[in-house]
Amino acid sequence: METILKSDISDDLKQIAQKVFEGKRISVAEGILLYEKAELGYLAVLANFVREKLHGKKTYFNRNFHIEPTNICIYSCKFCSYVRKIGQEGAWEYDLAGIEELAHKHKAANPTEVHIVGGVHPKRDLHYYGEMIQRIKAILPDVHVKAFTAVELEFMIKKAKMTLADGLKKLKEYGLDSIPGGGAEIFAPEIRTQVCDEKSTAEMWLEIHQTAHEVGLPSNATILYGHIESYAHRIDHLQRLRELQDKTGGFNTFIPLKYRNQNNSLSELGEVSTLEDLRNFAVSRIFLDNISHLKAYWPMLGKEKAQLSLSFGVDDIDGTIDDSTKIYSMAGVEDEKPQMTTNELVDLIKSANFEAVERDTLYNVIKKY
Image (tube, rainbow, N blue to C red; front, side):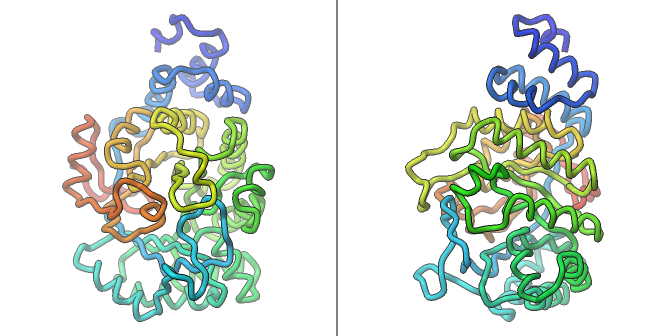
């Protein structure tokens, strides 16, 4: 800390460092300044200070698997490599019997969480997905069901002709335990209209998550970064999440998701560097002072880069996954079959000199390694 405060950096950056060391909230303008002017080493020191103040050296993971019921979707977001239309080559949709088979397949691994997201299928409503949850829990009665992005929820609840609150309560009755953070993309309307103009607005995404928190469903939050947005757009996004967390306290973790450029309409953009990934993690950790956990989703980043992120504010690298997600493999990531055993996750964390902790979805500790 003293080294930063005595170093040859601008007075503005020294003031930000002082705020962080004193546990004070930084402003939107200061967040933008961190993105634009701060060196990576400076950001690493501040982000790691926040991380260790919250969690020490603990780094979390869980035993999870993904179910993607369909990639058929009514939307055609420009960044998406995943979407197909009914009858199009590469489209899939599991029926409920197929979902049961997937649950049986993973039963022996004794997972603590199933993560369910997919396309917005035009013919499926809340009750269909509610029955899906019930069938999964009949096979895996103790599993935590974290399911459905806000974009999926908006459609399935409307299709069932229910209000947001009633629809979320009904899904909770079916067995939904929490919701993931997908579909947030980027909140700024001038960017959102260019990359995903058809899907739920930022305001709707925030309303759905606020309503979920109010009916007792915790959730995660995300951002899709590294496409056409500016640093100011990223901070605007973080600020809206920070404001909602002040109101509800319902977000478990924040997950920055990197735009990957294969097989989609924005492929000409290229991808941001690993250094930019680390900058984004660090600024997110410093700015989001009221969201306890910061996750690096290793199937998106790759294992080595996820490991490196642990020194830039990250305290969670997701879970075993078990080769059960295609969202990033279809967009060109290195690990086309994302899977790690518990031992591999523990080794990855420990070899970076952090403490491996298996958690459940709500960050209750299951086992320390």
